[in-house]
Length: 416
Length: 192
Image (cartoon, rainbow over all chains, first blue to last red; front, side):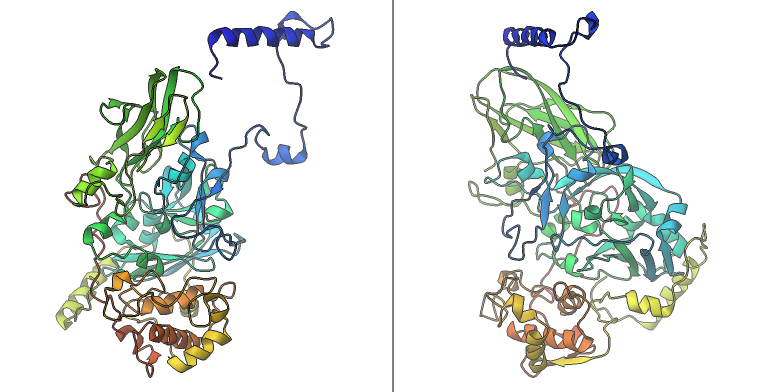
């Protein structure tokens, strides 16, 4: 992997010699005399039907380490499951590895899509009920969007990027724009909010402003090119791009158009006495994190590394990502990979030569409306918090994540 | 928008006129069917802060204490709303005059409206038997828990009329959510 060149050459020579020594038969043509796999994966019906990953790939989700609620709890329920961002490449999170946030842990409804219905009622001109078949007849959109849990907050006890940032993921979602459906039902002038509700056991419901409902919300049935997975809301979920994760109602069954903020139980979780804090606990700010190298990983040798990470914002597309390798004294622009989509993970890359000395890697991003990702001390200064004491960023914590590279190449969480 | 403002008749008439113009829009695709009134009533479990959707029924603190044990609440939340495996339901602080923000996240005790307590019990409790409580039981258990938290007196009777009028500790001491507009920073003047 990171071994020095002479060693690597030696290995290749050894490998070639080994391959040559195998009983390939005298008739084997010269161009076949290369290292080759010794084992094959049997082509079972299951693999024909749905495929599977290599047994050498072991990247998995974990129960998210909690700040105050044990997971699993006293009932054995796991509420939050974090994605292995340290292994991620590109901008899409595979459905099997997409993070999960729930209000009641392991209970995932097993919904027959033929029975599922979505009802629109309240302050509408025409209440309507849609079947899944109905929805798939309507004009659709496919867009990449991140979803991030409000509990995605780095703490000094976290070791890896999965623990500090694993409660965000990005998938390609397909469905009908909520505005298409609301135009179909007609919205009365007094209809200023919607309440979106799921069919699961707690029937989670959130109040969403009509401006957002008509802007870019998606009633989604597709995720990464197939049906949404049960843990992510099969057969139907609401995407509220850029809003905190809980607004993205899973198992969506009902949209009620109402005249006011309904103060549902989910809304109650956002309640605060400070208007600034209340405002920040709504739409997610600009945020980024380096996923390689990140906490728990190991640099094997000095020399070239492509530093890579993810950036996203509830305010729109990412317009700029900067990286510092000296703890924030100097910053340089990172390269943004491909198109930066609105409210989507955006992959960034940065070329770096590690000189073998201790280093501190940071990233910060700017979004299309000019919001800049802050450090914790910048936010503390804005709120006039006393210096030198731990500071909790109000609302969604979008502060800069530092990774310390020790001189032995080990990587550590440097958040304080 | 949320304040319990008194709507004057002219304002109401104006609203109806505006609503009338919005009706002019007709469906583009004609997909989906019209639900019956009964279907909407059966599905609509939303409870507004005004309590306008609250069903008929009533419950007292005493009835709630019995229902709390009979329907299984005590099995998870503890005999007195504390020391169970499930989250505690009684505030940490015995002083009724202290800051409501210090009461902990138990119940929705910090919610401005008692409708939030009623709604959550109705939609999400008890675990694995959600939706089995009668309206009377939900009123009664709500009454019992609000009594335990010193929000209402022991002789209180809760129904669709009295529940929305309960003066919760946080009735007025909370911040409104921002007026969200697309393309706007989440907090004016906040650079992050």
